[in-house]
Length: 272
Image 1: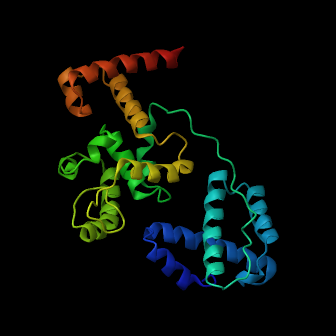
Image 2: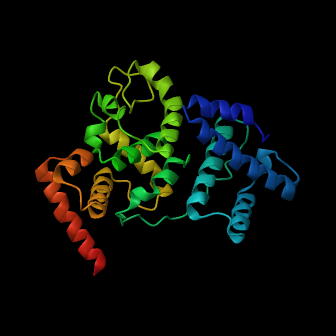
Image 3: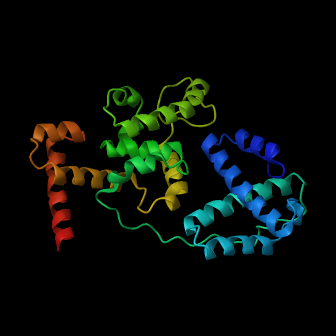
C-alpha cells in the first residue's frame, strides 16, 4: 500500500469517481512510491520534494515509457493526492505546485474513419463512461440532440450491437444503475447529484468530452464525429438504396442527399 491509501481512496469514492479511475490512481501512486522507496528509502509523503518528482518524470521520459498524455494523467493523479494530504494537514507543502503539464497539440483533424477505433475507445477506462457512450451512439449515427432527448433509451434498447459494444454496455450498466436509482430515471445520461431535472444537458456533456480530449487524437466534437461517421458509411456502401441508408443513418431524404454530396467532396479532396 502507499501512504494514506485507505483515506485517500475513500475520498475518491466520495467524489463519485468510477472504480476504474480509482484503480488508475492506485496504480500510479503505487508506482511512484515504489520508485521513491528504491531511490530515497522512504515512503513518507512529507519527505517528497519537487526535485524528487522532476527526477521521477525525467527517468520515465528517458526510458520512453510514457507519452505526454500519460505524463499529464500521472501528474494530475499525484497532484490530487498531495492536495488532499495538504488540505488534511498531513503534509506542510505541495511538491507538485510548480510542476506543469505537458502541452498537447490541439486535435484539429477529424479522420473520416475514426469509428474504426471504436473497440479500443470503448475499452479505454481513462475515458469517462459518458464520453465512451457518446462515441458509441455517434458511431451508430445518432446526433447528440437525439440521444439526450427523453425516452431515447427505449430506442437504444433495440439497436444491434457488436460483441465489443455489448461488453462496454455491460460495464456502463454497472456505473449507470446507481444513478438510475438515485434519480428515479432510466435515461442514459444522468447527472451525478440528485436533481428534479436529472437528465444531462448538452453543455454538461461537452464538459465531459472536453475533460477527455487529451486522451484522444481527434476532436471530441459530436457534430463533426457524426458527419465523419456518416460520410465514411456512405463511401463504403454506395450500393445501398436511399431507403436503406435513410433507415440506418436516421436521416430523411434531403439530409441523405446533403451527406452524399459531402461524402463525395470529402473523398475527392482526400484523393487529390
